[in-house]
Length: 141
Image 1 (cartoon, helix red, strand yellow):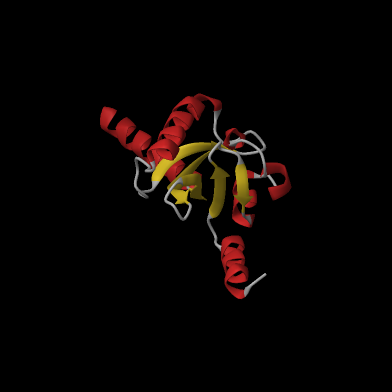
Image 2 (tube, helix red, strand yellow):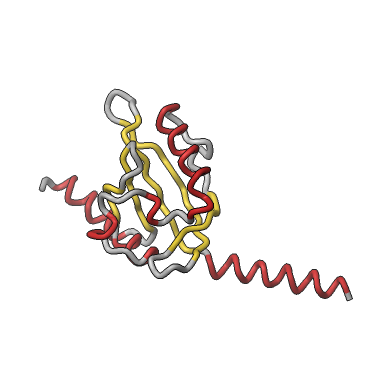
């Protein structure tokens, strides 16, 4: 492997956020160490599998509508801005994850897939919800 490719591989494997690359059909092609830690699936379990692996069933319709629109239209709706969403862990837990998405385009500018960076924010979201509930209960008294 040449030096720039090796460096890129080291970066992908060592970033703290989960990196997931899926092809045009939504099949997982790249799954880094942080993705395995976040979602509980090894790369061997995730590679070649649909993104449905980590998308809760109730969100799949909206996800796929957006995914296919981005691939065919050549742009994401969020334009790289982070979004908070739910994700599914291998053990069945539902996670809150903050994600950014980008299309990956070939040399001619055609979308060939999508890359997402994700981090677990479950603890933060649950603390914020508990604080809001406590504040609401206090004002109701």
